[in-house]
Length: 344
Image (spheres, rainbow, N blue to C red):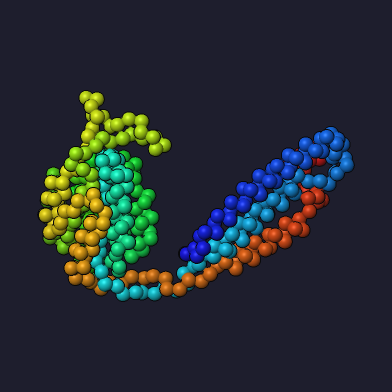
């Protein structure tokens, strides 16, 4: 599904304005009527007046505005699925989401910088397929191999350091999980890009990287952070309450461990890249991809989309007609229901 004119969603702000005006009007009416006579006399003077019908009218009116807004947005549904042949490589991004990635020694912090790097790399891809893995003490599949870059960036933005309950930096598990991402039937060039500060790594990471290299996977590592390092902030609602401390009560300083990341990249026929400059990282990755042979693969995608605005437009107009002819007087069935105890 596609939404053609998302800017019209702002028109939905009309609905709370309508509700507020309705509430203000009802309060003004009641106050004015009370000056004229008490409630018992008013019910005798207008016995067929219905509060329920007034509320029903305003609900119908709000639904009508919502439907007309959706008509302006113009949702489109894919109507034709076709197979497209592409040439490219399979790239899996393994993003470190351990607590040390909250350190702000690189702006705005390590985890946000990592997401920024991956987003910019994806923006510069042409026809390659991408997948995403999140890892800390464990590795977790976030997005399987796909050509849908929009979905990849959406999943990427939802990643955070609260995703994993177990802490640590299990790069070896991320590498093992990445092996399951690639399709053995389609022998594309396989790349694993690990974005991490390299802290609390497993000693098995280099050995697992070597095994991945034998399986045809090249590993490139991107270091995020600084050698000087920084404390790990503990925040609530964006406000720093404290900094993480060790068992002795000392503030923990987390530092970029480039040596680990270099060893992993070297073991898997890859390259280590310092992630402090986003432009340089993107340029280097692009240069690496341009030098690699591309393998042809097939992917399915929607080639034609049909507008669905007419359904919302028709429903909205119908609701407006209902609202116009819906009187605020009680009907026979409504009297029997006695909603809101109006007959008391």
